[in-house]
Length: 289
Image (cartoon, rainbow, N blue to C red; front, side):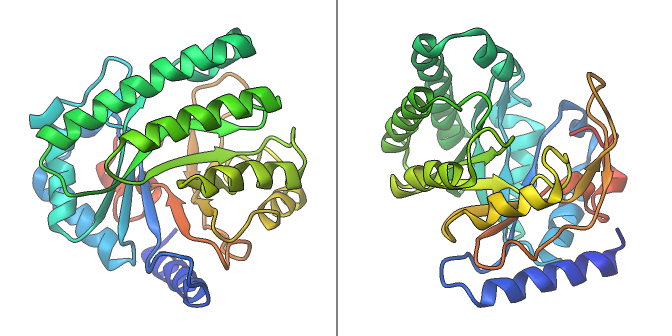
């Protein structure tokens, strides 16, 4: 995707925002840190963030700041410093918390009764990570992001959805900034039931971002549109700027692809993700998600 194409896409997104009083002024951009990103220099980070701002992005959503045992150097590490540079270049920060690399495996292993204890443990780790970031990373934070994505495969049961809703409300009440989380549909719930679930979280003050599924192709395009149309305008849409090329059990691989804005006209918009943007791609060692 060329820079000219990217500018055109962002202009289209901003035009879509103009008709909605519910959306933020500019789209958000997801960044999923990987430990290999430590090779990027401060000067290169400055260029990446300046170009992101110049291309119309006003908010950076950092997927996580703790990934299993990896803390990306902590409060004096490369990730904290790169986000300080982003902040200095006028990007608002929604900062991700703790991610368990075995999250999806664990959900498939435990029963409904074990879901509450597992989520309570993981969200407790996120609360501790929020304290670390707030106290030592030198960031002016506008929101927190929980990287434990919601889906209607693992949460197809109403009892499990009730449990995660309750745990997320508990975490949100203990944080000093709004809580964000993302979701995706695999077609296990009906569009109306999926929309109602996300709306119930939003009504509790939790900002939900629904992935459009265009990059992963989990659902056929017609089904993707049906699920997106069932979402209230208060739910954000994550436009996937990639096309998955890996299959089966292969490591995730993808290539950049244009985003599709037509189904997100009344919604807040975020784009996934930074390493697929033309101004950022040369600095990243791989396109693995």
